[in-house]
Each structure stands twice: as structure tokens, then as C-alpha cells.
Length: 335
Image 1 (spheres, rainbow, N blue to C red):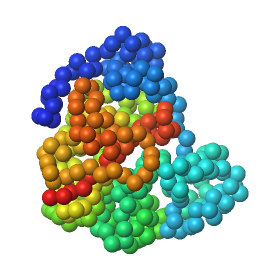
Image 2 (image 1 turned 90 degrees about the vertical axis):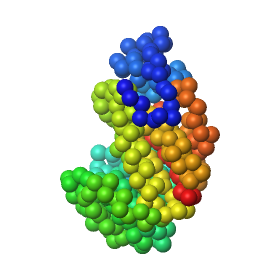
Image 3 (image 1 turned 30 degrees about the vertical axis):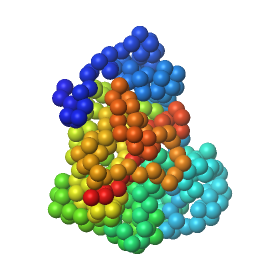
Image 4 (image 1 turned 90 degrees about the horizontal axis):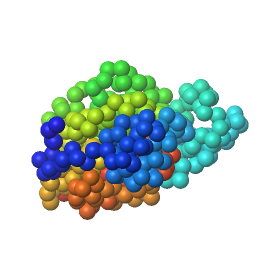
């Protein structure tokens, strides 16, 4: 395996299973090399708690669309249909579904675009980016549109959002959601995001919800996670790093980037951000998000010491927060 990060000299010894990891792997029918990583990342008891979520599913949630309806009014309307909601503690217009999950995608309110069905972890990246009506925003991997419609909602349908994705089918879905949710400030373009390089120093804010291994989806897609080899994390990390470099090129000086993945793999998260800090030393910094959610990012993992500022990143786990496994980091270009 070729490590794409020349800064690190990481030995594959870090995935050599210990006796405790082998025992857990057998108990949960999970690959030993992955279980060993979880033990090193979380400790034995938390690794076991994470594995307890395998295939168990996640509670559904919705994001109220304030472009179309007052959230209290939406809650009242849905509760009349015996759909019971509970406010997400870190976003007051996000709601957990306590009852009525089977009906939530089949209501008139959904068709009217009054809400978007979305895991609360996925609500955080636009919230952290916090674009204003004066911003020019790039959503680099926009489809199917959950985060794009959220950005538009935060911006009150003002400013400009360029939403880019390479998938033809997913772009059809994105455009459908834009119409359903009443979004008016988005230019949706199907293209390879590498072409965006031509727009250097154009955007005030960039959202990169990067393609990833999906390792955070253990509760809902465990078979995909079981198939992952260590080389897969580094292959994804190489692509993610390239996309993050593009984000840096197209954002204006003083502009902000939010990087996120639905992966708990440090290889795809802290290692990627750490390498950006090494590549653009004194020209980019990590900012502390103004939201209390999740846990701090790693500053040391797998015996690799990382930049101290990576503690400002946010991690969410299924067994701790009831969400997808998720990672977010806010960056500012300063040179």
C-alpha cells in the first residue's frame, strides 16, 4: 500500500489485531483489521458499543424548511397526524421522529416542501458554514440536495449558491428537491468538480461534503463497511485531499471552507486536514465551530501526532449521539 501522505510514515502494524480485537471481531462477525482500529480509536468498551449498533438502523429525523413554514406550525400539523417530534438539541429546526417514521415521506407537508428527511449529523455542515444572504457559496458535491437546500434556507433564498455534482441521476434528484423546497438562489450544474479550478478566488464560502468510505454508516449499511480494506481509506483520502485543495484554490482570501464526511476513519478526516495544514502552512487555519455538538477531533491517533488545532473539528458516533458517524472541520483561508 502506498501512503498518499508523505508527511506520515505509517506502518500497517496499527491494524494488526490484538487478542481483544480478535475476540470482538468474532463476537460481532466484523473484520479484525477494522475492529483493531476501533479499539485504538475509542478504547475497548466504546469499540464494543459502536459494534453494538451494527445493522440496528438509526432513528429518522427531519429538517424544517423555514423558507416555507414556521417550524412550530409544522410540528403542530404533523402531530395532528400522530407523527411525534422531538427537537434536535443542537439545531432548533431539526426534529427527531419519535413516532410515525413509516409515514413521514408520504405526507402533504413533505410534498409541499415543508421539510427534508435528513439525519441530524448531515444538518451540521451548512449550519457550521453559516452563509449569509451576501455570500457566494460553492457546494462541491451537492446531490441529492439536502445540504444545498439547507444552505439556501440559511441564506433566506438570497445570495448565490453554485451546486455542482457529476452524477446525472443524482442531479435530477437535486433539482427535484430544489423545486419542492422552494429554493430560488441555486445554480445547479452537472460537471466534474475538477473543472471548478477555473474559478479561482471566486467564492466566499465552500462546502465540501466529500465522497467517502461510508464507515460512519455502520448501523444502516454494515455490509459496505465490512468490505473495506485499509487501502480503501487511503485511496479515498487521496481523492478527498485533491478536492480540498480545489476548495482552497476557489475560495477567496478570508473565506471559509467546511469539510465533512460520513466516515469515522481518521485516515479520511484528521489526516486529510492535517496534510492541508502542512501543505498550506500559515495560509489556512482551523476554526472552532459555534455549535456544541459531538466530540473533539483527534490530535493523536494510531501513534501519529497531528496538529493541535484538529481538536476544533467535530466527530459524531452512532453509539454516542444516535446519528451517523460523521466528521466536520471548518477552515479559513488566510493567504
